[in-house]
Picture 1 (cartoon, rainbow, N blue to C red):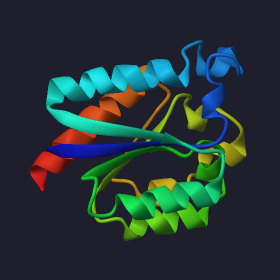
Picture 2 (picture 1 turned 45 degrees about the vertical axis):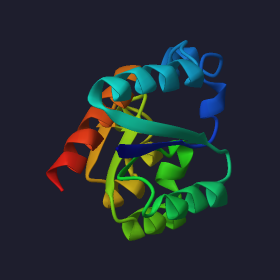
Picture 3 (picture 1 turned 90 degrees about the horizontal axis):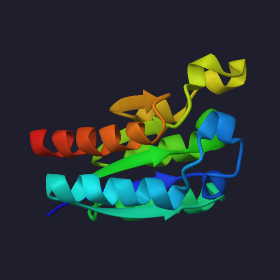
Length: 146
């Protein structure tokens, strides 16, 4: 069975209550459940992981090698700061889709640069929860191509 790891970075555990005008009112659990439903329809198994710690995210990427065919990652603020996550993703041997709830290109200047994008096969931003569903679909498609 095709397997996708969904990684969520810092503060995404606060979805639904943290700046709902930017990130919406849906919780991370809501998004994960929608992704599970989407994945089931595609015949894909997913596992979800969230951490506020950069090192834990790096370790999750490293552990995904040989176990997951693709990673969907919302590195949140680490997008703009983490060479370590970028390096871990560059060493990963499967497909990588970066996703953001908000459109990072319409926000603060510093948010427009994503180190993670340099390791991603594709980037989806600004579509809220729908972006995650599209990312799962894209990851499944990339797995099938390989």
